[in-house]
Image 1 (tube, rainbow, N blue to C red):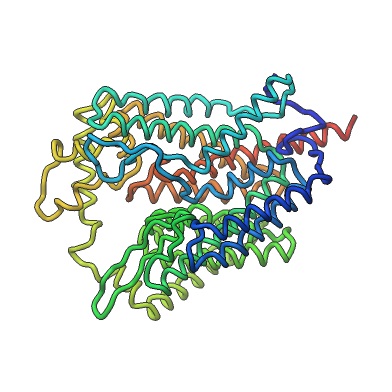
Image 2: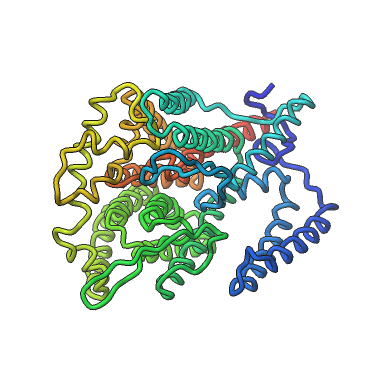
Length: 511
């Protein structure tokens, strides 16, 4: 059956025991990937000025594929690529939706994602296991599975009120695929080695996204990396010039800033681990410095605020775990961060302008009327909401229009929890909040884990999720618009799956 198994042989290399490598096929795989990479780099996907860069990048991926394929099964390799590409928007339209209103920010069509390809392959692998009656190790979600089911079911009430039923269906279908990814990762991965691989993948993604963001700032616009998910950069004017808000490969600068807020505590916690090797601490530390530096380029004020808050929480909780005194855990970060903030404000006029120079034109002033509008919508449609993707057409029916904020007011409410409640009704809001509380409870308990690496991954991930949720209170962030949060959800479960794996190993050693 497909419950929790404690097999010595794990055919997929994801949990319990060691996978059997296919060393004999490695050279053939590398050769085939080399030819494929060469053809891809020479095609129109690369773009004229990026063909050489893409070629060498794909060659590096071929080498990585060879290394991982030798050590693990192909399913494990696909799972790693799935986790690595979670922040990236790699999709294309397969069906254009016409004849309906076009609300701002909703899905304009049905799209095929790279993640769909992974789901298809992994689903076929599961079907083969079932056909061969080969049970593969899996873990239980516990009570969280109830909240996941309620979260998805409440999103299906869109036919009642939605003025864009096709768009709402497209978003429900997308949400279902994202939740399947979460369930797969949370139930299948359970080894410390694979958890380390995911963390390293997140760090490499930070370097990749940061490099793109820096190049965007230097170039003053997009780099033409549409084939890698680059969508836009945002230009802002200021007295005496202008500056670019970089979004890297994640689209909007606020989305990029949100992702950095999500992963920064994890990387910082591992940097502060005194029992980690010095080489890995240097790697984690340099990655954290790059992430913090790049966060400045997003010019996301909420991102700066939340990142500062999670920095203090992570620093304090991590070092207190190792018995450091209050002088190190409290006084030192306050003094050092104050000095750095003053230095940044003194050196960068763009940061000063972003914080203090926009005055009455700041979009933040529209937040209160947006919130009042969302509350009005919930009051008039409490059970089923507007239907996901159909919030915007209902704004003017429920808004107390203030002439100063008509343009900003027409956007969805800048509060992810209110937005989801308005689109799915009060039951949907309860399910959404319940899912978050369930994840937080499980993440907080990771503080008790004996293994330092596993405990700090759980702690850093939980603090990152807390920062994400806090930032979502002031911007358009929900699980469906920022699916990267689902990887962090899954990592909380993977942490505890690793604990189960270690306990089984100890039990097995006593036999």
